[in-house]
Length: 276
Ligand code: PGA
Image (cartoon, rainbow, N blue to C red):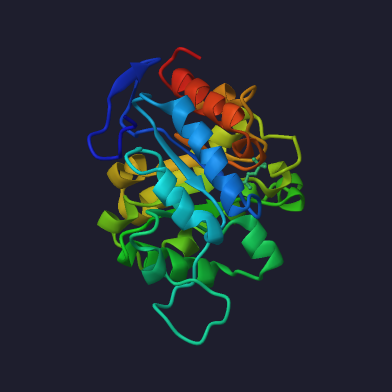
């Protein structure tokens, strides 16, 4: 059984006590037909059977959500959507509302950089979606991250901090605890060039948790889970999970192969527990 975020396992590594349940999610993006999705998740389910101490989610495209939900019956693997609108219903052709996701899946990726870049999602839209997800009891995985130019010109902390601040506008402290943040440097996504673990850890600490602490205080800032995303593979997951501020990963390309994703989950958990 995979464990949920209720009842945090506590374990010590390097004298730091971890109270956040690790969480690794797969973002399948615009890949997999319904049949392919069911085949992938069926294989994944078998590979992860019996694993404890970590949450795992898969985020297939909308058309495959129902079939994957059925294929996951009785499994602790969580199911997420990749996007949603903030309105309950209305004249928004092509959009999917939070009400439609309730009962179908329990997480939703919000503000992925591909949505921001290709579909014009602004910080304000991300904030509306985040609040709508929380209002419907969905776990939002909200994505933040700088582009290459911002990184090279030393703007990473300012950009990421501002994205976090904007995303959480109007969100109360108790709701904020439910949010998962994915720090995904845009230059690392799909490039095969991941960030350096200690750099990602520093951004999570100095930009993400620092802003959360300003908004909600230290205790809430320490309770919110932050994933790293961008070219995560079985070969590099340990580098990220060894970092104290990083609680998991949002995995794109490598989540499309069951063996790779299962290896990422197992090695990620091992690294977080000091066995990496
Ligand atoms: P990648 O994608 O793992 O293929 O780099 C990550 C993401 O976009 O979430």
